[in-house]
Image (cartoon, rainbow, N blue to C red; front, side, top):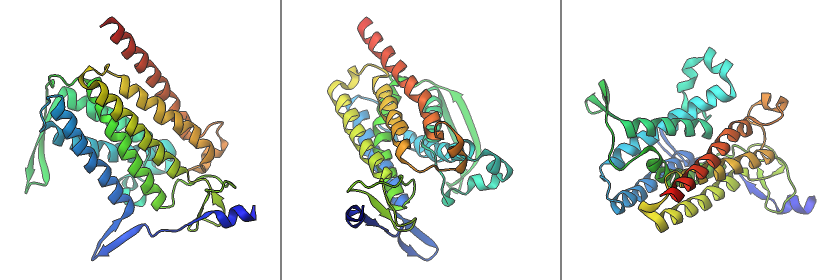
Length: 288
């Protein structure tokens, strides 16, 4: 145990990169933004190759960023501590205090993309910033069905997940349970125990998922069976999330009294949905 302790990686980076006046740039925010920025370039390439309007990518990026932040924040508040946040609703808006849930982000993205595919949303802005009115009208996007867009957006989501989980590592949050494996991290801001770097596991897993999904799309492109990539994403991402929860510390104290952690409970229906979508997509491909 002593040898492993000495071999453990001492981890205590400053979450803040620099501060200019009232503005502080943090690793988490930078990595979060990088995930979507790089993802936008990849999505532009996908739309260009498949002959879709490239201007739609800008609209999609706005939908994705808003859906991820709002969905993840609401997911954390309602899944992990609903009593507190419903009693203190203004705290829900305080995203800078931390607390984002990937399951909530998933629900937010699924909802936002449904709106994107089926409706046109326009707003009038004052000074280019503040909306004064919002109009919504039903409008289909030719060649962009719900499953078609989901198959391609999960490529970007996997990449963003890689950056976001690395941001969690820089924040020394979502830590693993104590362990004596030689690659253990000692999160000095938490305690002196060697722990599983669960954030790094998830970050690397998301990177592998991104490579798999992009390679599959690059092989089939427009011939990709609708729903296949989305289904693979759900099974892989949330299947591993279920497993990783066993080596992660509980996020909220009430989870200690549950047979499964909240992250595992929320992952089960998404994994089952993923298997169903894969089955449905392969059956439709056989008929075609």
